[in-house]
Length: 156
Image (cartoon, rainbow, N blue to C red; front, side, top):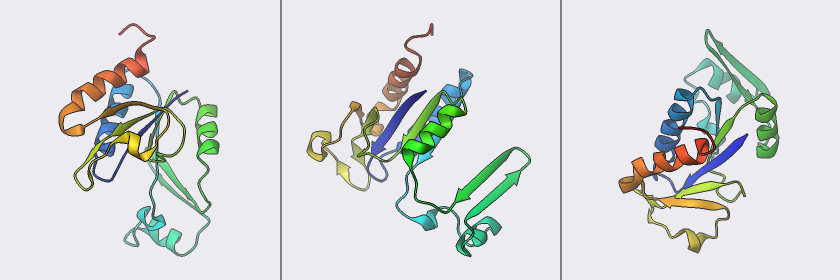
């Protein structure tokens, strides 16, 4: 299973990049999972949905089933390593992680944020950074790099 973190500060374009990466993987018939880090528990659901109301009421587990998918919310501290082990056991081929920038998985860093401005990756001490990009200018280069990173050992 290949794991790639997409890191950067708020409004750097992480979500948009991951969306494109997932589409590229699915076009190639690959299984893909995304893990997103958020600093607020309340970001999961608002009280405007039944599932959000159940979670807000204190449910330890809340499962939402629709005709085509299942979404589970578990009230426990996240354990990224355990989540990755679970996904590997499920046969997932690629995991994209948004955030967790201080963890030591292979990562790219989006160095410009409309909220924070330009960030020099060396100044913040991230490890295992394979490449840095500026979403304002590099979106297509990001996708070409990702194609090589994810499928480099296959015939493209």
